[in-house]
Length: 273
Ligand SMILES: [Zn+2]
Ligand SMILES: [Zn+2]
View 1: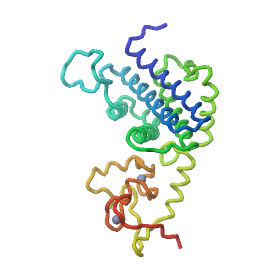
View 2 (view 1 turned 90 degrees about the vertical axis):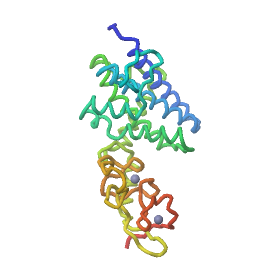
View 3 (view 1 turned 120 degrees about the vertical axis):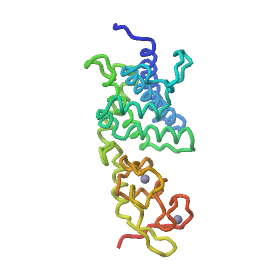
View 4 (view 1 turned 180 degrees about the vertical axis):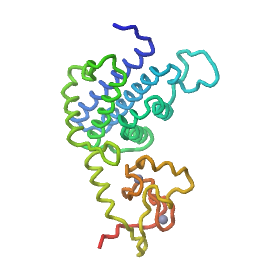
């Protein structure tokens, strides 16, 4: 066995532990469909992803995993590591173009699901949650390639024996149900919803027809950095020029220009003629 630092062992061992516990939750959630179990499955695979990202950063430089390094203090067990959003920004520098290729929207998906679970009352529904999980597991597989000891080492080798069947079922689900669309990996279902939504170009508000405001257009969030639209919409995954899925928190009301979700205007679809 090669010499490993204590920190590396902690990060890696914890990553594999969370991978296995997330798979255990999936197995149990599938049989009982309990919300609580799906939530833990998603949270644990998100922890696994975070730890793998930290290990990748640590390999570039150990200091990169810490929250603040701009004022010197000796590193101890109490030194705080960087939060998720900082880790994600740093990994982009460290991995460069490889990052976009591997990530393809999955970190945003993990972050969105994690935030929803931690901050809102969210319903995770099968099979959507299972597909999302298979998508995140595929990211774990790709990240593992970045931190493994040799080409022969597979993620598979780190999965507990009794969970191997579920692991391969999830790999199947990824191939079956996930597509690369709008530059990211998403479920076929979401892709079809986005394509259908593009037909609903107008909304009817108090008897008047309005053209909907598309993602990244000049009418949208002009007061914030317009760079946001180089990435797909954080809430509904459409790209610049596309119409948001109805109910997306980014869509602006074409009448009052406020957030459509909360502005209070009574909108409905205008059936295409
Ligand atoms: Zn959107
Ligand atoms: Zn309005």
